[in-house]
Length: 318
Length: 318
Image 1 (cartoon, rainbow over the protein chains, first blue to last red):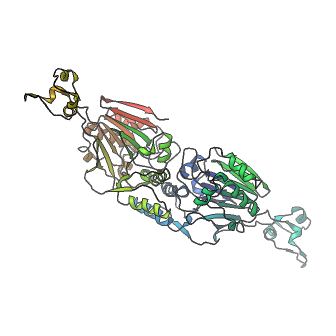
Image 2: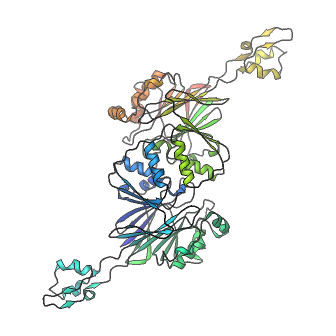
Image 3: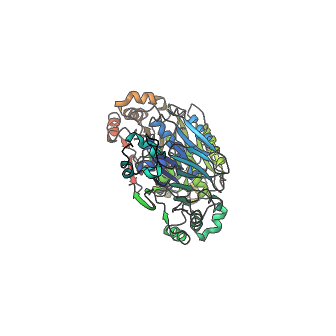
């Protein structure tokens, strides 16, 4: 079990050649999700060789342009690529109207259905679930209605203790699935072998939280408690703490505080204001309150694995 | 008097890293216009160091995404840059609704006014005029309502024949403006010196036509007759002539025919389908019917000057 986040864009406001607005591609338990979709996201997907066809679920945090202006273009491209499977979009009220109006006026006839999931709750709610993953909203506090998203792996199957199993020759391969799902083994004579003696604990399920855009909001801590990997916006440094409050953004120190209070495993910073040229200052500031900080960079694929949950691996997608 | 066209994007359909959708920046008689605005146009403007603030008029040919998906992002960026002067947008019905809906839902409060000019005529009409330039629509035939645009310099002032003027010492510098505007000179004794003897013809006013997207439509020839510089789409080559008809696009040969029939000075091809990797084939095909063909390339600034109207200069904006 593992989670990989590929950073497609991690800058705030206007797109520039090497500074794209928010978008992330998430791989979790063989599920693939797109989170936010600023202008140019489809070009970034191509650049980093991510297969468009793997994306069936897109989560939009809020309706500021740097988080969704690329969505209509991506949807149109899905159409040109002859997509025929459903596309699910989770986002605030109004997003459906924006998309449908543009499809209607351009007389686009998509060969697939878009299923819109309108988010409106101010509390955290379960918005997606399948056999592998659950996704919850993380209500944020920004200038307009905004959600972060918490992605949680479900607890996996128990792992077979092959040595212990081999000591009981009555157990056959066809029994393995029952053992993995936690059932005891009952011999023909009625004797019970406890599951715990035949299996190991499953891998620790991992979790990832995406929190952008938001002012410092300790209220989210209970929702993202013990998250393994946390992306939290840090538009500003402390030198612009007041501006952060006014514009409902967070500073790097505040992002660090949220990570610390939540007991997060690792913190990824992003959504940098273009006012700053030395991004290392963000890391330094967050590290004054929380140790495990990395800076989001375009093209970076950040992975955590349940086998070594306290370590990150970072690969570049170029 | 001169016209420069900077190619910001010249490919059809989906944007790719080095193949952006339609957008051009036009400089004509010190006026600056943006024509079409595919996704990523604002990044291209930055890349080619074009000052955003020079753009007061944007012309949108039609509501297919590869011609306007970048507009809302550009407008938002104008807002972030604290623009306060009016922005004029010329385009089909529906464009205003698309833009205003997104501004409303993102609660954007722009510090400037957008003046929408809704185009709906099926005939050519004058849509912009100032002291230097006139702009007309060129009704095209595509899958949805589409206009090309014809930009015409106004005839400039007559040029002073200083040698002839000096032969008449009664003429003072304060009389020059009257001479430039074509008036005869009347001596104190009532004698008239004909303007033509004191001035030369003004520079030839230049014109530029942008024709995309369209099927081969000879009906536009009278509108763009004798245009100096013609951009005409050539989505396909003749190998896909039928597909061109079905999708209401033109082939390179058809673009060449329009240029020939219109007596154009120069032809620029663009809006290439991604099916083709060797773009030189477009030039070769168009040249079978028309001599002066160039291929649009991103970052190219193509200039014609009234002093040498039959020659192009091409500079790269990197």
